[in-house]
Image (cartoon, rainbow, N blue to C red; front, top):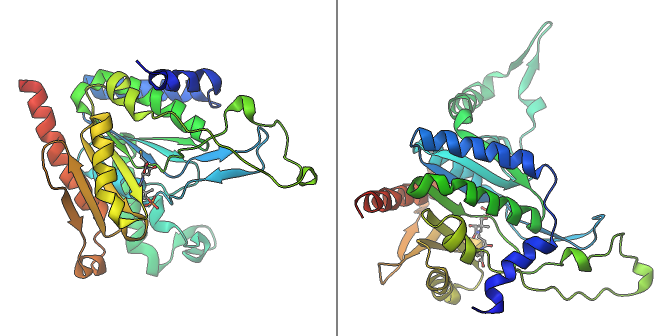
Length: 312
Ligand code: 9Z3
């Protein structure tokens, strides 16, 4: 055993739990228990970027890029595929169903009548469709939010542990953009860093690799999918394969920052060559989202995994 094997435990000892942690865990507990009794599949979807605060009273922070599109779109497709969904997302990033209204002004969609407010003709169809889907699936969706890296990791650990009861019915889809670097709570100044002290030099320790305890200890029977984000095309396949070899989970989905909406590759333990999902220009024009194909692909893999678990 190396020192690294315990680094994650030290992280949780040194960094305090987020606010409302117990209340959130109670909700997650109830959601998982209920699903386990009914033998329903549950997908944990993580979404959005984590912040790394520079001060305890946070004025400044470092952020990881993610709008939350991947996670929120995937959540909708998992719900439609029959999953219960725990949506662990960065506060104020895109959310399932509401994402379609992002950038639109709700006040421009309504008409004020003498005694009521209605949706204008132009937006009737779109809003009705969205509202119907939301009403249909909202009971199957549990939303939990985070801001900082530390909040995210506390909630990830707790959710994975609560999902233990689901065994192979659980699927983890780790799309959140998680910082590799952080400032431990003990090294973070309490108050705003003053510019009068001169230029700021930062040295950020590495975040312990949480995929290791996640796969081995917290959710050992779950079907686990992680994402690998790169900007250099040449590194994508090797980095995705390395991640799978290191953590022994089930699928790594590699994507490049600039083509992530049209192209991903899926690396698993069995196939020598990764599977690719690519949207054609026609599909893009039709409004097809790559997440619909990713979720369809993963659902089939999860079906197989579940069937193998039952027989094996
Ligand atoms: C991803 O790669 C996601 O697909 C994106 C989605 C963040 C690119 P958007 O929300 O973007 O649609 O705007 N997520 C994983 C990022 C990550 O932090 N992965 C770690 C890494 O690459 C490994 S777990 O090292």
